[in-house]
Image (tube, rainbow, N blue to C red):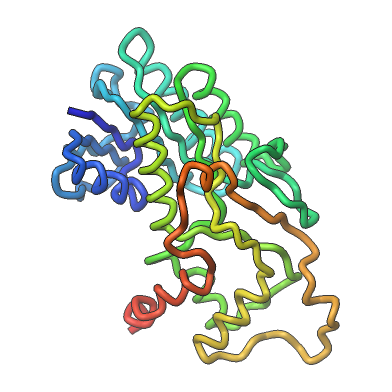
Length: 283
């Protein structure tokens, strides 16, 4: 029986866990807090940083899906670098799993409208991005690892942008934005897991994004119309202000080459699928 460990069994991890339970795998999920796990999952509530090495289960495939407790370099060091070190230490001198690590496209520091794909060199432009790259390299140096670099994840329960548009928060300068629906991240994680279990040769890192880089103002204008609210843009806005001045444009060539296709190929499809739940949440 295939054995899978979801280290960080939150929203994304639960989606992956449900997939492998249906595949008749033996799935263990670990989360730092909370005791609710999907049906069929052996759940453990424990901080990964203090979990004794002997309590890490022997598995074929390990997903490392962490969420930092803040946006500081220190928080990222704890969530990513220290947790990666704990994984490496736990599997020294024993059967080692294939590892899939959820990272971020923030490791690409390009910010002037450049096109970015899997062949683009990652050059961190922030301390938090440096911590992600450090964690990636630590895992890659010690275990068979694929880092899945996700662009901005949105989806059920992730309503920050919707709320901001509805509140008519100031938009700031326009920029490029790259998005990926939560369900499409899960499908990418599951696909990579299947390929890793089949011992296929995979690149050390793979981008997941919907491949439709878009002007942030375009997204907000669409949301404002869909939510039937006015925008905070003044009448004095120049035509040039509508052109994105910053950001990068991301395309997931390697993932598509593996046969992956997003269920939500653009922000329109993705946010439209969320509208009913968002209005219910507001009520």
